[in-house]
Image 1 (cartoon, rainbow, N blue to C red):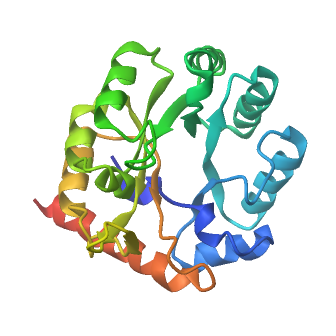
Image 2 (cartoon, rainbow, N blue to C red):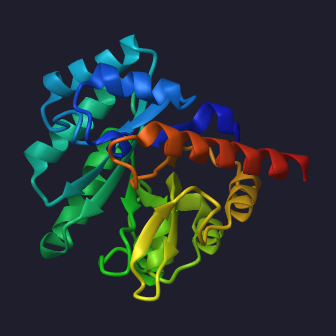
Length: 252
């Protein structure tokens, strides 16, 4: 694992900014050069338009390393277009959700397209109120689905679901395809608040210890959604906290 070559940021952190060149500049101002591109900044099911957006980021010195989060609902033409976009752009990983109303067909379509396009589709666990937020469900799917299907571990939403994200990373290491590094603090009402990684309930050092032991090779994507109008300062602090944790783990 070489974190410096894997660290990225989720474009949703910059959702209030629709000019992709401005977003790219902000990403670079955070000390980053890679991004996971979400639908806010490109129509990911429209190949030509999305390719133009990806190329625009590249021209500004920011590499698109993954796409998502994208929902699969067994709409094969639309989902095939998403996978074709990834193939054309040289992207290997997509963070995904599967519509419960369309199961098991949505999962089967994901398995088939992921295999056909040689993609890794990582299920995004979106908290305790989301059907794919449960560690029990994630373990079951990873145990029975085709290798194209794995986990995009969102550390904060794992905490929201009462799961231990470090334990999930360890247990599902062989199916861990992407990581969203995000942290929550919780009020007495259990309402989550975005905080800089390590300032809430996430054991950042423990997470990177597990990733290092597993020689994790996928995208490590920073997320901080708490400051929609001035995201650069907070995302920069997240990057600094994560890199400091990585250096501590590297030193042993």
